[in-house]
Image (cartoon, rainbow, N blue to C red; front, side, top):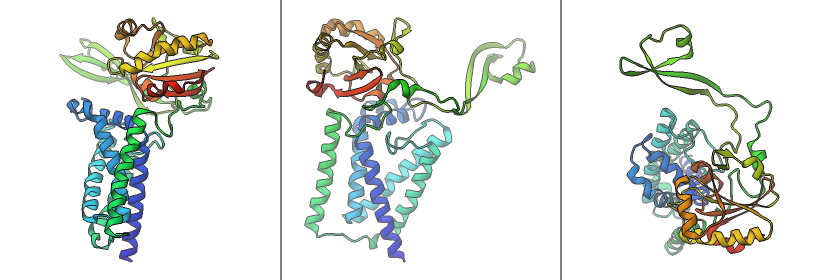
Length: 367
């Protein structure tokens, strides 16, 4: 019985780590954005690690896949199980912290393929920890499946193939797009809220300075006259008690000079949007290619615009690269969700996404 439970744990943990790792390896940039959240001032306050999140994301997801493979084939079982234990203890701490303090809404455990709430993520890690502890206490029952030479080849192959996949998706696009802006999706439909959708329950919080100290009061406190007469109003905050239905696309905008033109632009039969969430971080070669694409597209009847969160940099970039198209504004998080490449090229027909390209693949653009 002990051997059966151990072997089941081995298969369960190994497969789950491989699946979880491959989903994140499909989109390591997206996972790095999650690490940015954890390292931010509002969570662990270690912003000096933010420049290294992509490298750390790649290391962690490749490690997940490789450890999963090593566990299944029984390669260096002591090292493998110790590594899995340390990794799951680390992840369990992160997910518990996220859930308890309500700081990171989605740990990104399965990327955009499967969204888990913080408490669901924590529960998943506790279950994994349970099975890994079974493996830890029955380490001697984990035997190699093949001879040493084959084991070495399989282990090395898992590292090489994982690293190659990471390199490929970073220089092109995710092999499988799980985001609401994937090819074939209609942006307008993604923004629709069903008539019977559950509404959010929101409580208004009023912040006043009372004797120099910022103090929060509820709407009931305000109605009951509990706010001191000498209190100084600071701000009003909306506290979400219960989250209602949030459409898959809820923060998309195409703002220019304070006006949102998304409704008009999404009616265009031929529209190209260049996305560059941060022009300071945008690839110079990629920016250099955009004006030629713009001229070719306009000659074929396309409306061409760019989308960025770097309002103050647009004039400088347009002058430097001789760009003649307009930059519209959108929140950086929304642009990062639309596309991972910086810059990237999106072809849209009346709101429906027809093609998405990394700037490295601009020669594959179909006009």
